[in-house]
Length: 71
Ligand SMILES: [Zn+2]
Image (cartoon, rainbow, N blue to C red; front, side, top):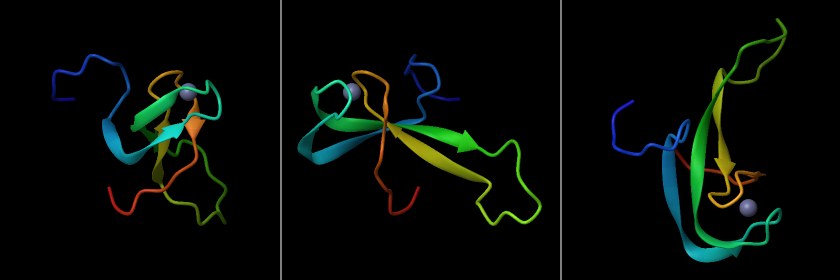
């Protein structure tokens, strides 16, 4: 992976237009980190996508629910 960011596993970081409070650690943050998810096991009938992303609080590392328009 290219780049100078040494935080392991963090693929990208997005800045929020408005600060939010993490529901887990209660820290106010203006950014969310993005970790890629790859499917490793699936049922034959599953229609779930092969990959996705998890949005993570940069302060505590907890997964936070959110959506991205396009990646
Ligand atoms: Zn947090």
